[in-house]
Amino acid sequence: MSEMEDKTRTPRQDRSIKTKEAIVQAAMRLFSEKGYHQTNTKQIAAAAGVSTGSFYSYFIDKRAVFIDVLKNYSEALLARIEAYMSEINIQSPDKHALLSHLVDSLILSHEVYTGFHKELSIMYLSDEGIKELMDAQYEVGRVLTLQYLQMGKDELKITDLEAAAFLVFESISAIVDVIAFSSHRIGTDRIKSELVKMLVEYLYV
Image (cartoon, rainbow, N blue to C red; front, side, top):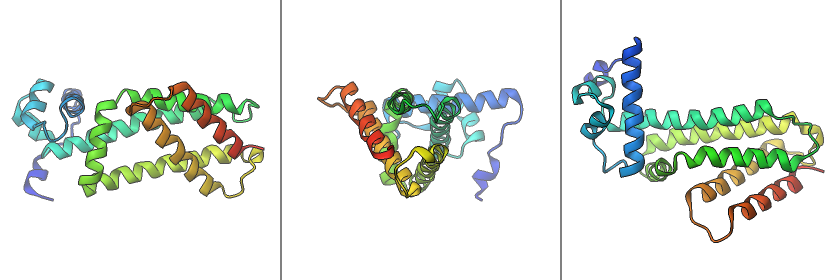
């Protein structure tokens, strides 16, 4: 660990925790609006209402706060997925409604972070450490999808649940990203409807 890393602190008091959260939230806004490479630590500190010195007492550099922003982003998406899984009745006969609700939930979650997602795409290709973090988080999503399938496996016509979970996760992720972050000439409802239909026909008898 470097000398600079030794000097950063883990906040324990409420005031310190709130200061660090303010820095992370300010960084999220700036990264989303201006981009990672067009944002500096002085701007983040000013947006958070703290001194530059205070920023460096919590983070060694801009990349470190980007990693915290990424963790918050991932935790928010994961929390929404877990909330959905805890609420659903997997035995419901209306599989279209189940999957439509999941897709809607993910679209709403992603739309909050449109600007930041663009920066994630850039950082994924340019920073190996960020790529590793994101790959690990994608794997969490695949595991949750597998758990979802296992909950209702008696109704499934597929036999390789792990491979199916991979396909389902990647399909939903790709289409949700297109809906939330890209322009497209086909209406969102039409895309979503065909996605859900495809998944139901693939998964269920």
